Image 1 (cartoon, rainbow, N blue to C red):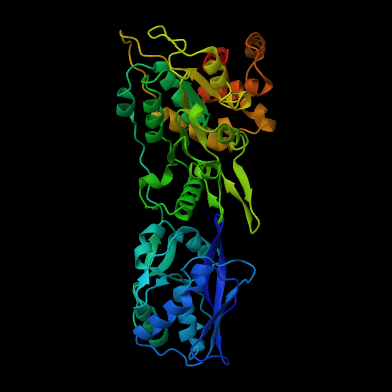
Image 2: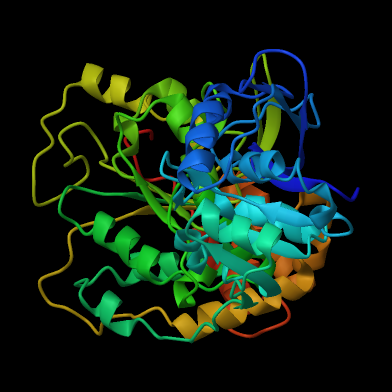
Length: 499
């Protein structure tokens, strides 16, 4: 980095770029500020905020034309976070030597009175400063708690322009604090969450496998059978992520305006329940400023689509690639970027429009044309991308012992997969041999069962991935016949009125 400059930052997609802020004076209309460097509308409005803030803070605004450059000039600068850096660069025109050899990183929106307000998307902005080695970081006091996740960086909380100007130009004292790093995460067993669900032992077992291996999970059953309760329980029992994954989640939350708190929840992915009226851009991302969609907000977490056939068919079809890839490419005329989307899709559906197709306790009153139209709601290629497809019926009146998924087993299975470098549900096909470890007996069983059940090639791969997760939950290195048999049973064709 070059000396004698003040640094700010600007966000594009999910990444932030360091912005050099420098001012010069001379010529033109007295007292006029000219911002150059491709400022957006909200950044360009800083002219009036900065002028009033400087005067109301007890400092003299230069009686010359001021030109403020925001470099690099080929990146559009959006947001009001540059206000404070612009004001300091103007005040430093009379005493530029105070910036010599120091790398100031300054963020903050100014009010007309000179008070410093919190800024949005603070996490990626500070991450850029840390990455580039800035030594003095000045932030609005309201934002300090959010970025305490960063370890061993010195931060100066700022409440007003006068406070930082007195520190820089008059040598007044300004207290700083050091980031403590992320809080530790505690292991908890959420047995009580599952005990509230009556029966449905098979569905709860499938939910355990889905959480352990990151497998997409579709539950099909009549209304009131407990599908949504199982999905919500999964959202409360998400296994913790690694530190790098947690930082990715915090970055996405900050970009989307969600609060980032340095507590145990920092390590857990998001559970996003999406309404069926949501559009394609809301789900996938996009818009004028390429905002992340729900699939990105669910990165390392769960995306829940209740009543999947109620979604627009175009929206459902748009999930085909994101369900298998861990990123999505979005572009419009001005910019393009990749957004991560390593999510686990949990979906529910009724078996038919009335909801009672195949149920002995109720009579299905749907006509053949209604069934045919309902059948076309979820295309076959999308159905084939669900690792786990399970019919969920009403629980029996006489209950057997209730099954409770084990959080400890799920977390242990996740740690085993972390050593391989990927979750079983997201294992690249070229690395399938790494997880598909079994003998000749198991191989014969697998090929015979796949042929009898008419599994597609994609279906065979998904069976192997599910079996690997079942073996990881059992703490076994090799896949056995019982693991394969259970995997086949959890990928049922008898779900929606397709067959």
